[in-house]
Image 1 (cartoon, rainbow, N blue to C red):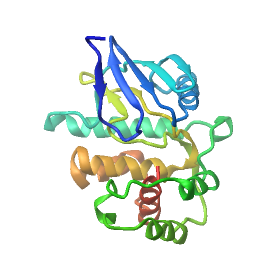
Image 2 (tube, helix red, strand yellow):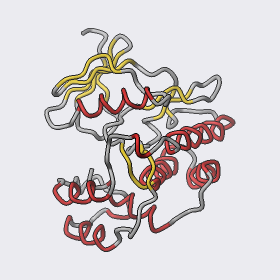
Image 3 (cartoon, one colour):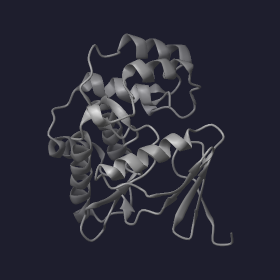
Image 4 (cartoon, rainbow, N blue to C red):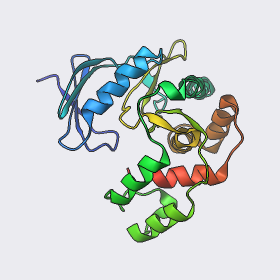
Length: 232
């Protein structure tokens, strides 16, 4: 294991080790069998995703996805291309038939799960730092949308989880798909724009992403789904 490298980015809580072109994820709590099934399903739909090499209780081994994450150290002239690539990937994912997706992340599933979840109050978005769990739960229930615009969502579409070829600016694959399932499109759009704002090019890159995706800003859903993400 001398060439093994522990991966410390991300917030899943799982132990991840990179070695010899593979990623080995181990966790006693995460549903890694479910994540493996989601990656396999994504690839079967033609969406580039990490290849599953081994999967079992508490263990998921995937092949390394080539390229550089959207959140990588891109030169200024490349950033618009990378943002557009993320938007194109999002459109392709959201175009998959909802009735053929076996994974459910509708609010009927995620809100009850959120109410049972432990929240890391030290790792909240800046505007919510200092909030109590009770305050977050009250806001979540008070702002829950009346309806859902359902698509197939990645569920954690941050800029660390999408890899791009630095030569062609094409997406080479997505990783960390454990939350993939049918949900409102703003679950992905809210997380992607937040990640772009914080890691890539600020509000300008987030606005470009939404234009390239082809949607007008829904500020209420954006705020709700960013809040929901605090629970996971």
